[in-house]
Length: 499
Ligand SMILES: [Fe+2]
Image (cartoon, rainbow, N blue to C red; front, side, top):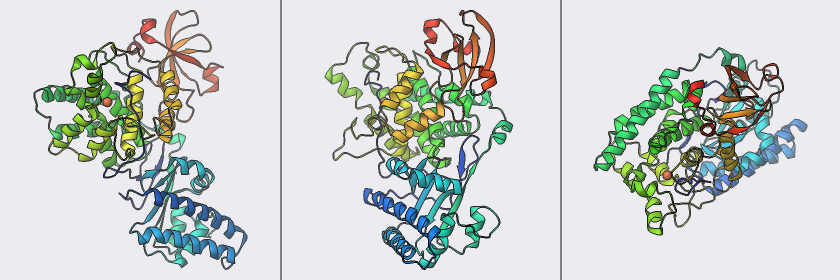
């Protein structure tokens, strides 16, 4: 990884923070989740552990009712144990809400990486059933559980329609079952093209905000919270509506205005990653504010120290490592600013394994929004040239993220990040197996190695009229695959000439 001035790390959740709240959404390329209830509960490790028992019992009950009638002792015992476990959540004052999202599992709004692996088969079964979220509300009766289990087991109900219709007909008021709707390929193909101008305007607006923030902070003044809110609202809109255009812009770099471009890129990458988990605007807005302002603490650190080519003295290091604290303090003092963003600023250099800075005693993990920003921050920092380190190539940076998954970074988020951008993200200059050279335009929806590439040089390194090749299309690809990323600056190629 690059110099520690840019090392960004991630860890588990924190309390008192914005929490993801999956809701109905229709963004192309991603399943949308419809939930009937969202919650802001922070579950304890004991409650998370108990969920393992619930899911194990649920799996057992699903098997049992396929083989035995409802009155069979094996079924009765499964139901009784399930009721007892769910009842423990209820006696603690919380409803039990479990979401099955792609290959992941969420308790309430909390991603559970380990459980997502442990209950991989159950997640797949539930997704196949069309189930997005199941919620057992307080007041649940054994009769309702008996009526809900056959539905959760995919038993034929005789009711015409999807899972929601079956659930509605089952008289289970304390069991909410909501569906997952996957946007099909045809819908994606008919989706309007990205509005590049709108995306660009949003990017420029965010850059201007950062410049103003820098100017005001240096004069001991603060920007208006309304201005921040407006910029972030525009970024959220564009990430949702003009995703590929925004992802392409997130590859922009500027050596002289590194911090400004870096902050905007981190916000775009964080918001894009955030939308893979939730399309809840409240969550995305807090995430966007935190991501955009994550490094504002650096604006009070001596620029000569930040850009010092050599290694830092221990005093200089101590000052640099305080920037999350300086930034969180400044954000906390800004009237009207979304305070849910403050912990994101504070925690963006913490790690998934609880290391990193600022240190806390006892050690506590990060909120999911901070973990998202940590991944985006590290990726953008690694791929940027700094006064003290060269830029890494995009595919190398992806490898660093992958090799740090589970230690520095949340492994689930790293997986989603790589799925989002592909191994060869937009704006990467790549060499194909044919020897041709091109620039990546956009990632493929599911295959991380086959983006669409605009080829601009042939195998003899002669420039040609650019040709777009979708490498996931066997006919277009004609056997080509990507060998590796190349250094655009070293090739004297200006990527923008081909976009
Ligand atoms: Fe930072």
